Image (cartoon, rainbow, N blue to C red; front, top):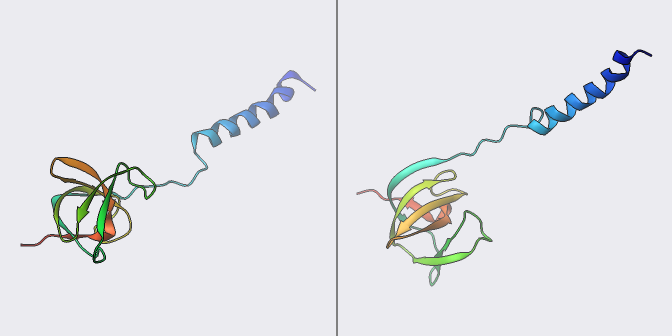
Length: 109
C-alpha cells in the first residue's frame, strides 16, 4: 500500500468530521422575530392574576416583575407574533423584560 492510499481514508474521515462540526449536515433553524415598536394591551390574563415579566424569553427565567391585567405596555419585538406562542420584549415604567406573547394584543386607537 502506498503512502497516498494510506493517507486518503484518514483524510476523508477528517473532512467528514470537519463538515459535520461546521453544521453542513445540520438542519437550518431560523428564529422568527417580529419587530413591533408599538403599544400593546395585556389581554387574556385570568381574573386576580398578573402577567409575569422575566429576565429572558423562557418560562423558567428569573421573574423580574409583574404587569396588571389590561395594562398598556411598549412592545419592542417578539419571537413570533403577539397573541401567539412565544415571547415579547416589553418596557413599562422604565423597566424591560420578557412576557408571554399570548397575553398581548395590539393596541388600536
